[in-house]
Length: 100
Image: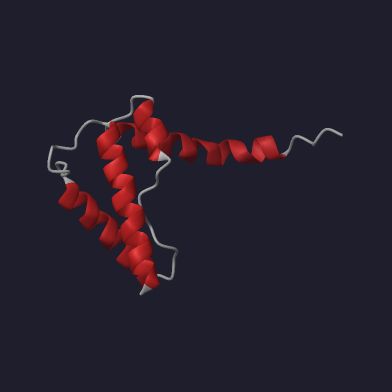
C-alpha cells in the first residue's frame, strides 16, 4: 500500500516537473497527454509487479535531456540504439587490463 503512494507521488512530481520545464502546463496546472502518461506508468508498474521486478516509473533524470533540447521520444530511440551497440563493445573494453 505504501508503494502506491511512493510511485504516485514520484510519477506526478516527475511528469509535472518535466511538463513545466517544457512549458506545456496550462493555467489550471494540467498538461496535454497527462492521462496517457499516468496510464502508461501505471500499466508498466502493474506488469513489473506481476513479473517480480522493481517498479517501472518515469525518472527525473529525463529533465537533463529536456534541458538539452530532447523533447520527443526520438532521443530515447537513439539512446536505446547506442546501448545496444555497447553490448558488442563491452567485451573488447573488458579485455584491456587495468592500470596500476
